[in-house]
Image 1 (tube, rainbow, N blue to C red):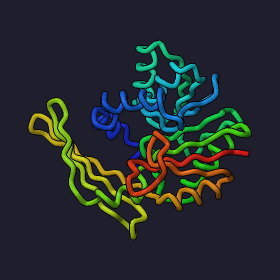
Image 2 (cartoon, one colour; image 1 turned 60 degrees about the vertical axis):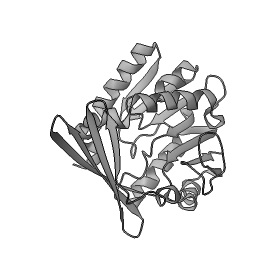
Image 3 (cartoon, one colour; image 1 turned 90 degrees about the vertical axis):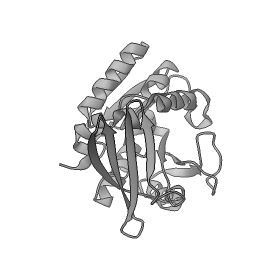
Length: 245
């Protein structure tokens, strides 16, 4: 089993990965980010939607939203979140390396560094090709990751995150000449610990731009945050957007 196929990982660390703070940030981004302002009624695919942090605010904005995730546990949480918010969204359990619906969407988004999971680089490129095929002409793909340039400022320094009744310890390790990154997580609660490791490819702006273009996208742009700022040394994220002609 690959690490991303482990439902225990997503469920075990969900309160950290998908905290109320992150949900509030997602709602704020949908409400105010120029990068997430789409024409009324747009068909939006949230690829690796998790528990629906972006699905709910996007649906409440009036977009036709579909969420795809490999984790049945995360999709169940997304279903519950949509029901609680009175939001309507289609939910599909599928592998992002295989999922494609030709010309079915106007926008595809992939958030929270949910790209680069596969050990085979060709499979990561296939995700982009699938997104390209799933977009109608003129549609856009937007991917949000921690770029290599952003990671370089913090990698190697352990992080401690306090949660209600628990603590999460994180340590990042650079692998293969800064091609991949392993993140080791430890959740400590009631004197017990639960650990997991995630390993994925990491990309610079230039590398991810080149992959977009290889997959057929044009007009590729890189941004440093959801406010649309340029990607420079002050960037907080790497957000790459491309167009299917």
